[in-house]
Length: 120
Image 1 (cartoon, rainbow, N blue to C red):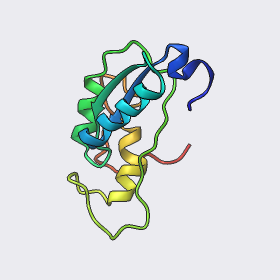
Image 2 (cartoon, one colour):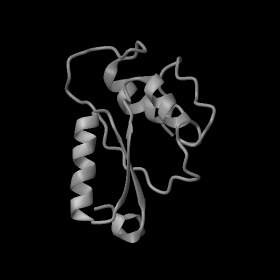
Image 3 (cartoon, helix red, strand yellow):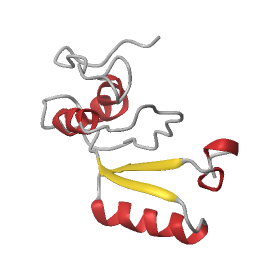
Image 4 (cartoon, helix red, strand yellow):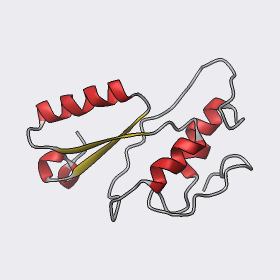
């Protein structure tokens, strides 16, 4: 699944950050059925909404993040804008995941009003 020490079998605490509570709950149930005793946590996160990203970051209670598997993305969709006014694929793919300079544990999310961070 994830590999080595990061697998639930290795004692990792897995935080599933999901846009849909129902699908997230199903993923947690599937994970727990495949790995009995897995330590899981379901948190809501919509990468197309910077307020959701900030809320997720501000609500992060763990002392560290060892591995991030980012499985969010949009492609080949009609042009649309997010609640923050960004083009939807740019916001979801580039801006929201980089709003915090230190990851989800930062208490000062990057100001994304200027658009996504440049690569690098």
